[in-house]
Length: 316
Image (cartoon, rainbow, N blue to C red; front, side, top):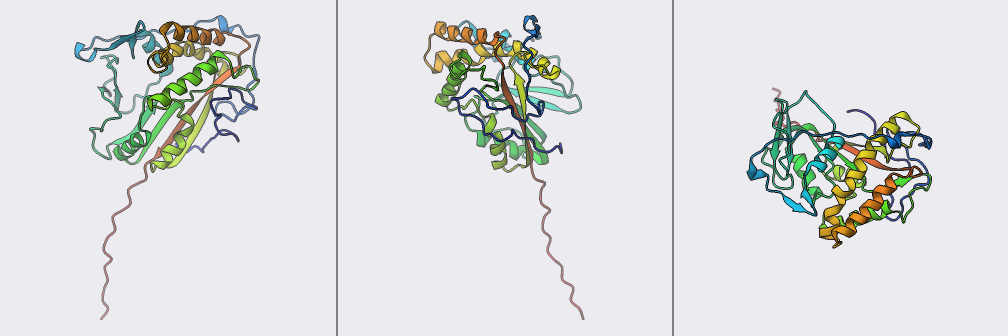
């Protein structure tokens, strides 16, 4: 965890009125310009992954159904989350929290899932955890300072807090992502809906400041580029873009349908029409768009040693 801080070069995050960038930023996984490979046939490939389901007591399975979808955790959404969170860490005791009881019963012996709301008071004692990790909770948090204060309180001195969030915005270096494009319009609407609910969507660029303000030290920010599709020539970015080819279209309805209909007042038909335009744009070979993933971590300071009374020896 002693790696140096890597930050985007030069520019602050753009306001939601500009979907283009004038130059490629210095990302952790792309330190030079992102060269496009327009001859690639990767757009024809399909990547899919199915998720296991578990039978859980009906008392925690009373979900809402809206617009033909089970909110917020139907099978489509679980498939999308499996693609987005494909990680494992066997050498620790892990406690996972979620509002939805969708986790399988057959888990590793070191893993425990708890159905809980992280915005409520935490039931664990102070100085309890060695490591607290949060991921993709943009649009879910009403009071970010309070969440970070609770994380700070319940970490052991010397423990780490880490958060990883995707920017709810997109860029292109060659101008292929237009400001009036369906994708930028959709992102603008998501941010507007988040502002109306008091749960901001595009929080990723602000995480470093918030974590620092909460009292953490040695705060480090790393920014990764995630191409929208397999258009880069770089093999690693191309592979990442292939996965995003699947994740991004599934995210359009997962993120947008309820916000469009319940917050912005659009009809389901109008919402789905807009979302289909976005998905169609994703399939355009000429689109060289990307988003950014921000990873921020910091350490809770070590406890200061207790002061002891200074003893004075009298000389005779």
